[in-house]
Image 1 (cartoon, rainbow, N blue to C red):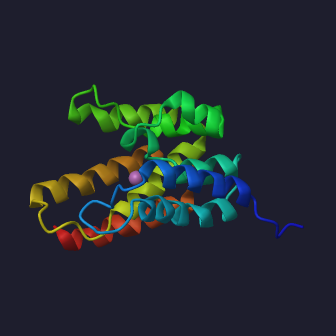
Image 2 (spheres, helix red, strand yellow):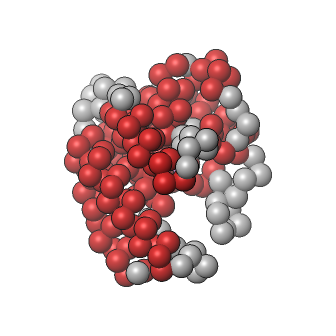
Length: 182
Ligand code: NI
């Protein structure tokens, strides 16, 4: 019995359908791939940690990963997300969404503060998101932008790394590898 998944496949599929419906024709930036590839990749980074580490609510972690960009990037409202997936997932996703009303420089620190006020699943998703995004940068990114992106990843690691030793180690590796693109 201990081999049973710690998260519900039905909940995974429900979140995946919702993400597919709302991200719809959105593409991975700079690539001709459906945006769904990004959210499933983030979930793939998260699953080993959800399996190996004591995560209080694995379903919130998995479903939150699949839906982490849905409020920031689509027209789905917070209230509709509560109705579809429940308040725990919706609050985690809201914390992961940057506030567009703030000046750009304040958006990440503000989101990190709101993530820290949530259960640890929110921090784990943010770590998995940045691990996924520290891929080879698009050719049009300036050196300054690449340096800033790597520094922001270090900020995320310092602020949230405590939530998951496994994801923190993986993000550390990715930050080191990203030095090759500077
Ligand atoms: Ni993302």
